[in-house]
Length: 371
Image (cartoon, rainbow, N blue to C red; front, side, top):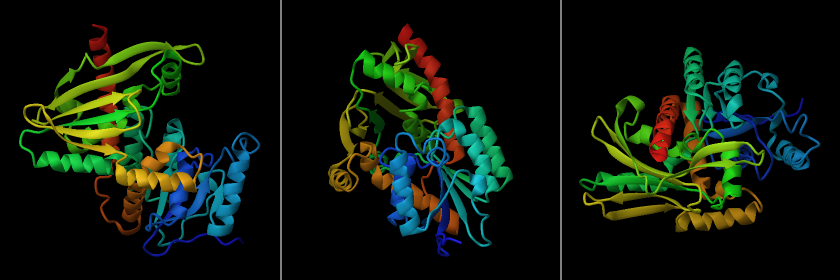
């Protein structure tokens, strides 16, 4: 029998579900970080990749995946499988973690398969599922099996978020605005393609990270929202045709402020065409900006340059968020291996709240912007 990677006593045995194409797939980048020992508590032992080990093997990306597979098998003794059911049973005493990085629509099924495969902790990429109802069913399924779910909301551990929160905490009467930008061109063709590919809508996709921040750190839930003030001068909604010819209505940019019944307030600004820099801003009681931390900052930019040279042609966002991906994986793996609390990592409850907030805000804001 071929030798398979095994975790040390202080490591989680990781199954990566959904690797994707090298240089393109988020799963691949998770694998690269773990194989590079950037997450000391995570030992990548198995990769489940049904597409490139099946129908996609001879198509685009198939040759690149085959090359990655051969190298990971030879250098790291990683086992490759087409389904979770084919992965060998977990050994007594080993703590098994599933990192699910596939299509959101497949997550409810994959969660069940990961539980059946003996995983005690499951890492789900955002938003976890396509609906609140699915997430609530998944939460119950995991709880019944005594399995913990952690969410890959990496902005929860971002340096710029942490620094802004700390500055605001020390500034009387301060107000935080989280700003998320993307680099789509401001034209009907570019935005139409974006609207179709992200058909769940901006708040369930691009801005869902910010909604998770609100749920994690500002007590924002649908039940605790007192008021929502939409900045109509900034916000914009369009109906555009996607590549298929079908029309989609979505926000290309939004800005809003939420006040909670428990006395907190926080703002979010998201712009599909706002550029490559996201940031958190703190203003004083008079509305004057007193602090801003951007992502990427100078330290991040230096790391990006190193990674661009190491992985030429990879998706740019892998590099700018590289330290945060590492932090989330390490904390989740440590939780699995040792039981240590995964500080600031979003739970399934946060994922449910974020999706509920998105479903609550979207029709409300659409109505405001049509008025």
